[in-house]
Image (cartoon, rainbow, N blue to C red; front, side, top):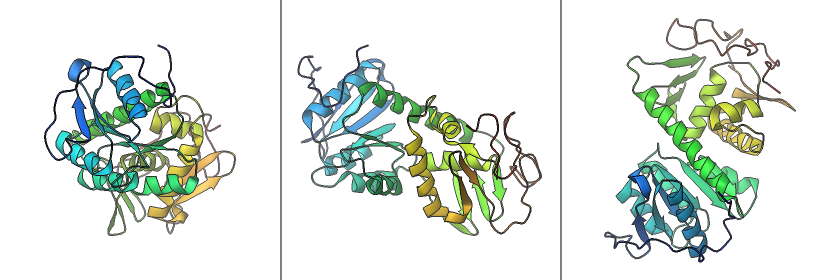
Length: 303
């Protein structure tokens, strides 16, 4: 399939007729059913050409789509349709994308959000992650990559749903940090730490091998399902977001390699396979080939 850039016009292909919609978002947002009636993606973009191009490509890939072209319509339509994924532009009339993301995340914290931004500014990206975004792309972007990232977000959501259905609780304890994988909740001391779905998955990946250094490429493969290194900045931005919520002392940077989860205030904290990680008294060893919890040492896959 030919790849199209998001800035390209979609006027050359006919769009399917739109049924009338009801509710407060009717003036600017119309749900459109795609083939298969499968996962629903809410596309929020005020540029009609881009909105239609993104929605058309997603429908061609088998998704159902809904389109909103301003902030209030996006919030209303998210409540009305309960999407599986939201593709959200930052610059919107009415309410900007950050506020829309904040409201959607507050109402539906498990719904992943992919933000679109025209500015490749790290401060803006960190703010987006702070309000609940799970991933971001900078305009102009590849439609093929956008579809791939939507698929990745859905696969991670499906894994989270499968974990939530497990009968036995699975809790990871590292000093003052407690990670409940079944309920997808994190507590630091007695206070709950609210994480986005991506931040939670990243923390679980690091916590499964405490003090072991995981490369950016390894984290991309395990958390984002990416097989190349094109998203290493995504890893860095999410690590910064985690540090802001947990405290900088919890995550150590090994320059040129990657990151490790530390256990501040716990002398000789247990490595993988030792009691204290996983359910009480049950070890949770990392996969074969990891570093075995040796500080500052990456495993064979650690780049």
